[in-house]
Each structure stands twice: as structure tokens, then as C-alpha cells.
Length: 199
Image (cartoon, rainbow, N blue to C red; front, side, top):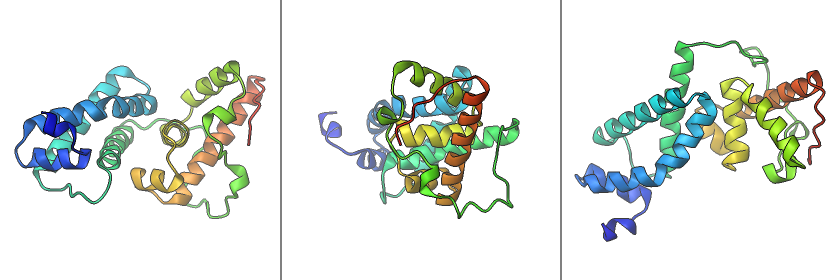
């Protein structure tokens, strides 16, 4: 086991494929907390998050045994992509109505970086009350928007990484962030919440 502890996640995945079940146990213990937090934030329901988490790992095991994982990048990014796909499959089956959602005709190529919040979460929200208000508003966002906000500000992922993880273009990721910001501003106006954002 001590030998395994020195391995990277990628090496553990390949060791598991080679027949070492203890490698998978260690890989699961390393990744489960971060993965479950991400899933729970997006799906917003503990039972559903458990279902998605379990289905994600069933798919991970299946794909590993089918030889669909090659050590060509971060295992965690590969894992997040699978979880994202499981979540999106669930939402396709249970379509919810969104507040503002881009459609096929929207041209997102003209988005200016001024429209996006690029600072990290500590710089954005000046005090604890604003943070609570923002969290409540984030919880009201459609899943695709909530997901990009979570990845950007809670996992500190770049828009390029978000695009790769969610299987969309960078423009779509930027667009989702833009709509998330618009929706949160609209909610702030409607509920007369003052947001002091550090841009």
C-alpha cells in the first residue's frame, strides 16, 4: 500500500486496469470528496448527487476496463468530464425551465472580457452577507450556469479547462458565465440586494 501512496492518480488508474484493486480504493479515496462536492453543487439534491456520484464511478470502472483511459492528461479532469456527462444526461431526461439560456442562434463570439467576473471569489464578495446572498442566488441558476460558476470560482478552473471538461466551446463557457452574471444581477435588483463586486 505504501508503494501505491507514492503514485499519481494517473498511475493508480493504470495500476487498477492492470488488476490492482487496492489502487482503485486509493484513487477513490483521493477523488471522492472533490467530485461529490462538484456534483452536489450542480444538482442541488443530496440523494440525486449520490446517484450521480455512483453512476459516475460505474462509468469510470467500465471505461477503465474497456481501455478508454490513457494517461494523456489529468485523471481528475477525465473524471470530471464523466461526471458532467452523467449530470447532463440526467437533466436532458428531466428538463427544467431556465431563467435566461442561450440558444442556437445566439452569437457568443462578441463577448467582451469586461462582461465577465475574472477575480477570484475572495476578491469578488466583500463581506459575509454578500457572500450568503450570492450563494443563494447561485442556487437559483440553471444547472449549466451554476456549473460554470462553480468550476470558475470554487475550483479555480480556466474557461479553457471548463470548456474541455463540459465538452463545449470556450465561447459557450463564456456565454454561460455571462448569462449567470445577468441572472444574478436581475435577482439582486428584484430582491434589492446590493452586491459590491470587485472586478
